[in-house]
Image (cartoon, rainbow, N blue to C red; front, side, top):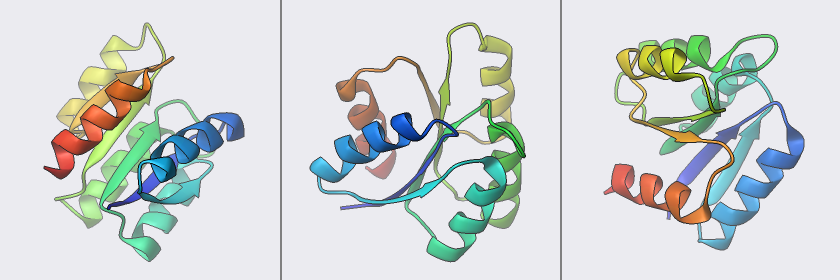
Length: 118
């Protein structure tokens, strides 16, 4: 299966997503903010990234741009709260391949991942 980087400042959400994905056979690495996401991405070279938009230190949009600058083929799915449509559009323009609105359904997350990993 795939190596997936899960990025969110809320630990409970990282744990929830990590359990869901590892239960589906994926290998998980985690980061708690955008800055760590960039570092972990470079060190681990994951197949895919699930990343929150709103985080301290470096937000998901900035981290997305940084990751894509270093790896233009990076597959990133943004996690967003309701009401962040303008930020989602910016993320798509910046190279995000998909976005998932919180709170999310297991099927939606797994579906988006399998679509991107093809």
